[in-house]
Length: 236
Image 1: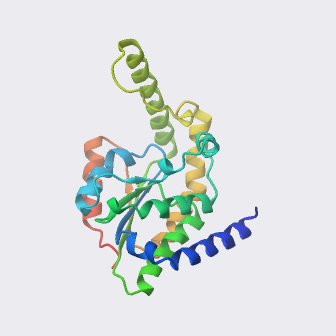
Image 2: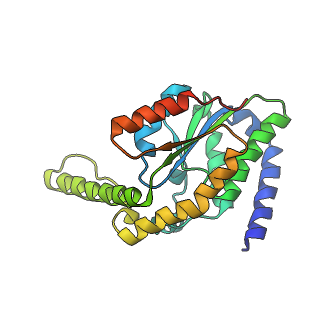
């Protein structure tokens, strides 16, 4: 299907979704959209963001909603899924009542179409005179550090799983194929810059937005994250 047809299909989906009163009632009014370069540390830093904004204790992780085997295969090869699949999955996930206090959405949006759906949601609330609080947090790395961290993550996961197998204690971790192959790790970073980073710049025009450099020690990055999110005034 062409990108033009994909866009029309997504527009129609959003129009129909907006007509559902249940959707309007159940989607949280406070959402922090978290994105970042591969290996930038979303999982490491998300707790600071959740605590600062007083959100539900666990994030809504976009990729965890996409569990169909064919979807997982495509994701594991470092590719993006079509916008309709991802947007419908994430927006459906947002209606879970546990997120009513507010939620951190991890790994969304990744494309321009998905970014436009975030602005659509903001405008939908605004059109109904409903106060909503949105912000975008982006964690950044350069290519060399991103590839290094992806491969190091894969190595640590393999070592952990070997210890679990030998001892019979612990839980085996998922090993992403993208964390084992330097070429795929580099491809993931290139795709992030080409698709996701461009999409995020679109959001920068519409929502409170902070971009944080995540090179350096854990403590250094933590300090930058806390300082940056403290300066955000969420969309009202």
